[in-house]
Length: 247
Length: 308
Image (cartoon, rainbow over all chains, first blue to last red; front, side, top):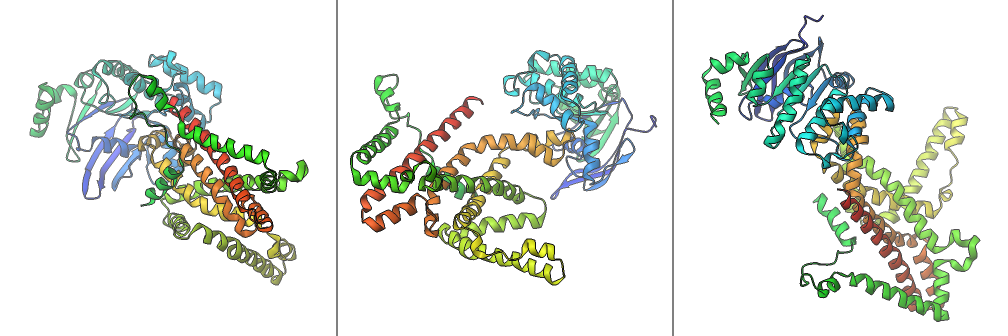
């Protein structure tokens, strides 16, 4: 059972009207692997992540999570989503709830944990991301980096088996990027299965087992970070890397 | 076009904040300009009329008749002022439930639900409120009573007497006019509130729903814990303004002979020919209610802004 890939994506297609966001993506992710996805904007990176937890319904192909195929069955989708943490570019914390409530709500509503237990777990996760002292603040009182760390704690409190990161540092001021990446690096070291859309090449080098270059809705190249940075095989990959690495 | 309607209705009701732009900065002149003079004017008007009511017997009698305070404590429940407030409150509470359900239905993925909601909203909007109130009270309610009776007859025809008794034998007159008036106002305002709820829900960014769903919450749980609390906070001023409108529009129920303040004023002036006393007093009673409610709405708005 543990040898079976935790995520399997087969011939995935997604189009919005006439726009093909994903055009036949095949991907297998083994348990505990960290995959960093790069590519030009509009290349389908976010759409791929959003299809994996069915925030977008694919228009074609299959997605399997732990051997179960995603269908339109809402109950199964809710159950599977609870196992997949997602971190968004714009944090999407719940502004009307305190940090602690943000981290406990889904535990109580979805996992049916008692308040005490949920709060205990929430505090553990907040300590883990380094901001237990903000438990009673509201999201609006936190910096961007702190908000993103709360968002990570919120996802972790559900004990997810997979974590999806959709450009988690793109909306952050430069001095806050490191605090978020440090948390993600720790997670990667502890063996969390992670799919990360990010152009933080330092993080990719340090944490990624594999990198994927996604362009035009297709996987153009898939390789270890060392290979991809040292000798990219595809012209498009070379061009893209030269553009993001020269600055 | 749909939003325009709501916006018109609300802007028309809200009392404008004092303008800050015309005054010179940092002077006594500016502080004076910032004072709510419009409010002082209205309060002065109310106090002036109150003095007249207290000092002139004709006015005092008109006031006692219209407000219903002459009935003494026990009679108060049937007094005009209580009928006006009670009708407005009851109709508004029903309208809130109706409006929330219709607002959610308007955004439903289900084609049938979506179109039922839309049809209801457009029907109510396309018919003058006065006509709608007559229609619901004098056509809609009797038709509903007939329908319920026909269900009873059908149960009787297939021999289910217990159910037949439950549904059958309902008299049209058994539904008092005040109940019909409340139903009519609630149905009318339900459509307005539906659009406010929809606008409020749609004002919450998509990311909130996505974050909630990504944590495994159902659509209903996400609505209840994440979207609605934020949406209702945003639309609280609009909801409050519509309650002020409701208090005013409740005067229409006097046309169903419901003994609200307006009806009492009609009856009083009809028998005494003291039109001036009756309608000055009636206007001041409404004005006192709506201005205090508007101030309450403003206070809520200010508190919400402080918490942002």
